[in-house]
Image: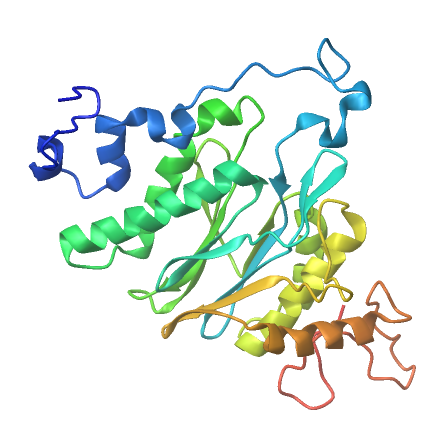
Length: 316
């Protein structure tokens, strides 16, 4: 028998799998195979740009790992909308043009990733297994508070790598079945969690996306209007942040947008998003900043979605 892994040549499950314990999959792995957790890995020695063995000029991206940005989320009348751009960068290079950054955590929650892409994707997969493991052992869904706290503990476990520059900063949102409303939770690199009101954004383009959200958000937005606001916010982020990718009309690569409500998690299909993106592009043509018309100009102004009241709109 391999005592390190507990493997049995007969093919039987190791004893660790047969002993009752915590309903946390992460705790189980930390106890029996901690070396496979993302935060427990050791980094190989990095070669400094321009140093011995370095590619002249640093090479594409200077050997940096891909980073993912930007994620936005906003509360709607029915739940939440979460959206992310599709660009990943490595230094000054576009590493990927169609990366996905928004994922279902379970049937009623979503997680968007910003930071070191590889570690973030692995953390999302581990978080998904964590929630499924709990549901199977306990026979019940984990509460929204419980899910937010579990993700916080996982981020804290990555603190060592974060201090070396490989940070993961997710944005968690979903429909709270107990409170019967949408909720958004943000985090810092230490695992600190913060309840956000109405909307939030993370990533390198977040400062520009937040500015757009402040001006476009209205309480009680329907899901369709909230999707339009999210795409507008990502457009503004991409307009000023080189690490954020806007809608790619040539490749027809749109942001990933998900709606979470009491009915569950739903990712918008390409066809649904096409109409929204084309509407945003049409509104920004000749008016790239999305500025509203001046009062008394005789035009209806605004690039945002309607609120359901004729003559009004979500204006900038």
